[in-house]
Length: 281
Image (cartoon, rainbow, N blue to C red; front, side, top):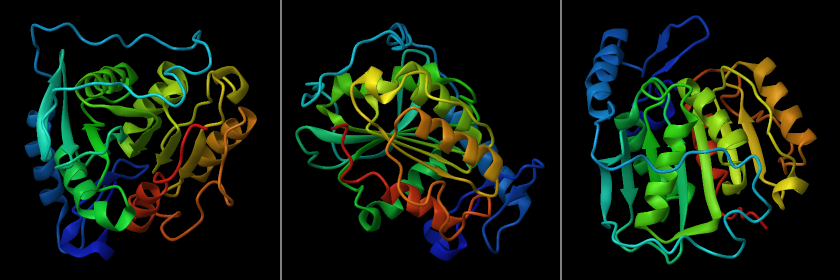
């Protein structure tokens, strides 16, 4: 994800283009982007803990209604008024955002960052929270570079947040960005497909298909794809979602401002705005 210049200083984003180059915020050079990535990476590196990682096995064989429709995780003990603190779940590290008074139960958005890293993605989510209607969400961010292709890391974080907070089973969402594409596809299409009411795949660089259909998991998830210039993969994911019975807006993939540019801030904002109000049923 690249810097979203229309947001000025609010968003400082970086993303890799198809050729591996970096797109940096207006007024910031490639060296600044590299410095940010280098600074962020150590904070997001996995830190081994004594606790065992949460179960991250595939739900490919589970029955419809997992977790139960109309229910919540009933978790407790998590801190409130959290603005990007680094948390650990087993050997996985992630950044956490929690409102001062989260709803009971609370909507939850799990995010895999792009190459800008976990810290910058967290700041961006906080910055656009009020304008996108997501400031009341609990949000967890995994570094998409550190956990590239690692959907099981996201499953571990999902379990950890659900254990600490009362997460709404019907309002749990997934956003993957750029370098986080493959991990997000693994988590959202294979490991925990039935957990997510909606999944937006943003600034894609790969494609995949849901392991189960809407009829198999008992509901039709919402889906959308932000091409970020990669229309081939975006169209392939949309076709796979449609084939599995997902609910997609018109048009799909996203065709608004920024659809043709990797890391455009307008597409990022559209992605975050996608989630409020969507439920599994």
